[in-house]
Structure formats: C-alpha cells, structure tokens
Length: 215
Image 1: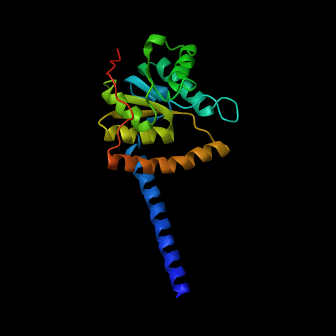
Image 2: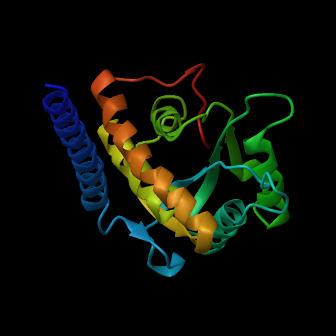
C-alpha cells in the first residue's frame, strides 16, 4: 500500500514537472515567433520612429563595477539617436527610493553621450516591462516605439506592447555571454511565462498618472 502511494505521488510529480516545462517552452516559443523580424542590430537598417524607449536597469553590479547590460543599452541608444532613427528618448525605469533612480542615472549618461537633455523624457514608474509598455501608450501617448534593450528583453517587450495596442520594434543592445549571461537568460524563461499570467489576469501598471506629451 505504501509503495503504491509513493508511486502515485512520483507519477503526479513527474506529470506536474512535464507540464511546467511545456508551459515554459510554449511561452518562449510564442514570444520569439511574435517578435521575429521585428528586432534590429544595425542602426542603418532600423526603421525610423519618433521615440526610442530604453528600458532601465541598474548601473552598478552588486559585486561592484558597471553593469554591462546598462552600458550596452546606453551605447545602443546613443548610436540609434546619432543615426537619426529616433528623435526623442523615453527612459523608463525604477525610481523606487531616493537611493535608486534608474531614469535619472540613464539620462545623465545619455547627455554625456551627446543626446540633448531636452530630447530625453523620463518615466519614473517603469517598475516592470509591462508598466513601461502600457505607460508608453497611455501616459506618453505613443502609437509606435522602438524599444532599446537586449534582444531577449526586446522580444518580450514587443509582445507585451502589441497586446496592449502599441506597435513596437526593437533595437538590440549588445548581449552578455558567460556566467552572468546564462543567469539572466535563465530568468528570462520564467519572465516570459509571467507575461501570459499577467495578460490572463489583466494586470495593470502600479501607477498611471497625468498624461505627458512628447514634443
């Protein structure tokens, strides 16, 4: 009797594991397919958009040193602006405390890189990619946008944007290889599952607020 119960438990556990893996695989497949041919790596070949939306991340690593994901997003934004493929930059990131302010930090580095301060708008409530996409449409009034981040992030952002009525393409910042890159890519698999949970539950941004016109 005990053996039978154990076998049943193991069988149910195996089924649950297989279903979980299937959900992850399907979620990633759908997002990759939906973003196919919508991301670019060469500024010259990237379609023009009025606004480039750079997605925030921490400037510094916990263990010290500049976060390469951050640096590459800055470089990609500057390259796209200088190629005249965007007229304005919308920086969307976390501003959760007085000690952590992604948008302002990114803006400073973009200005250092040659983008005029008056061409940069800040979204302080981009706590998640979902928030950034929804707010780009409903707070900043955008109908189309060029998302600037690493490819894996752009693909997810594009899928979310289009589900929320915002036409989006992505300009891919340089990715990261090695241990750090593998760790981030692993987390991305589950972030993509969360996309479908949020859409199913109609999850809303943490904040909306007054509309801001980019002009």
